Length: 594
Image 1: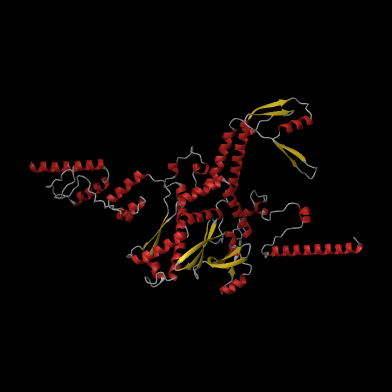
Image 2: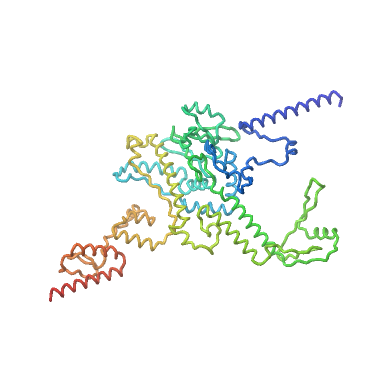
């Protein structure tokens, strides 16, 4: 190669280096400003990594000790920490929020403990799905045609969106894992509404908020942090959400209104944060370290116990054996070997052994030391530590011991599932929140159907419809049922006249109207034996009522009514009271004869 060609090649090389350095500087500037182009990956030059060593976590300062015995992030809440809906010190920006979601999603898919929490909470709170029924508002006459029409719209939405027992369970679990869920509602024609789940990471701050504000004709300054559009000084009045969609072929954004506008709406449910915080936080955030620690403890304990149980004996040799003899023995006993490279030398050969049941270890010139797990009682101590850690995890959801650890030797099932237990109370509170959320979703669906003209022949306005219709959403029962006791109690209340047959049927999970269509008959009025009405036909085997008794005084009538109500449904009480009446009648007859 000639000198001229070498010079040209050198110039091209320098130009290429200059072009590369310029591109990297521009990319870093864009990254600092937050305006990273779609698909752009910003990386530091190799020389910088070698010069500065490992990358530093920019959020590390929040957990450093500041010589006060507590993390520096816990010093105190400062004015402005919650501006723009932030939740300092837990998350400052969308990157912090994404890190929390990533942690929860990894736990949900890799940890058996987190998976068990997911299934138990979903099964107890959501069950196979809520029941949705349309009825008339309390105190108003039923508008049957309107009720039937609204119920048809609700049923169409539930069926077309695979809602009960499917979509609703997924939304609940997403809110536990991610701390929130986004559900878009879109009218697709003739009063039919389709729902789509929006991933939380899609909801982000737009790159050109000023242009959006001009299009929306906002009259006051806006806040777009975390993709939630509010007024700058009022974070509770949400106007809408900015959703970014990135695929292999396009990178676009769309604005979703918080209320129903032009057949479109976005439902946002968040948890574990205050009202002024724009985005929710995962249920696993306070306990993820405990779950990871419990998982490591369980794996290490089981693995160590498995290795110890496989070792039958240890055979130890006298000192003086050469290194070559040791390596030869390792090679002969190794299951496999691999080469481990190192910066200090050319590498080292590692030998991997396989401990099978009945293995005898050969020790050359070293003193054998047993594993800590081999000591008496160590396994039980590890198990107690593991259960203690799991109890701390379960306290986040008020879960009983057996539910979080799988142990059946602690609290009894019946004691943990009574109506007054903390877990039942927590699940019932969760159900109340999701009943309200489901009601809000269905009312938006009904509004879209109304705007499409589905109820024009029945009501004049949506306000008129809302004033007549009531949505009844019934969650599954959480507390354990003792069927015999509950049925007897309901019977006593029904016979006393304070419980209707319809309510009784609901408590027994029976469709009263459907059973009536199938031939179920109304129960005859219950008259306790021995308390028939004089002059009326008496039930079989009942004691005749004295026909010549004097009229009772008001006090006697009140007392008799009290004892009848008290004794209803109790044969022994009824028999005692019947005998008292018979004895009283007999005594009055003797007095008159005398």
